Length: 238
Image (tube, rainbow, N blue to C red; front, side, top):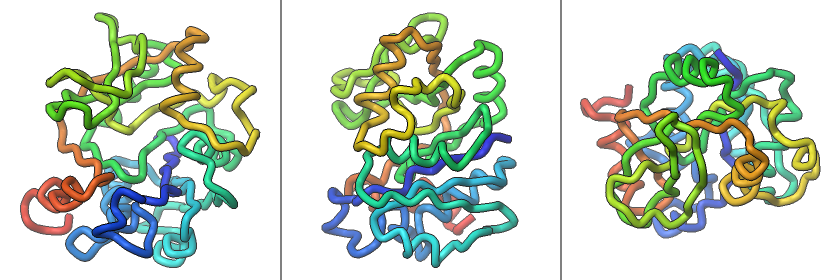
């Protein structure tokens, strides 16, 4: 299984009314940090090497989890200043020499079949493979235009159509396909607004694979409050 990079450096400003004084991925869901549910899920899928891209109050995360968690290795990539999703990803890439990484949003949980995602990625010789889902909340998620072969043609920040395919926040990324011009700049940059659109414009092979599993993005209070029913569908913490 590939090394996983989890983007856990966000400030969580939209959650401040309900979650204070901790990084967003450490928001408690039934007494456990959201990040713990993520780690448990991916470890159960065979991932045993994680790079946590952290920034805001990173000590809260590192002190809670340490360098190993349930047998998995945890490495920390620490932002000295806010670098955005893209900058955090690029900084974390300096911690690995792997050709393929699993990139995860730290505030999103999506129950996907990782083996199938990886098989599709390799079959299509993709540079990046998105996990996608059908969105039924207008304007809530980034939409994607995908052709009949599954190739991502463009990203759209304004998703105005119900049932349109949307970004699920899980990606397989061929590290050598990330343009050198982006790497090691240590500047604030966005995955969604800069790196991925730039790769699409440069005709990188970017595909989307659709899944119908449980999904939650805790980025806003309303979704944070319903996270327990998604993460613990049977009423337990497993």
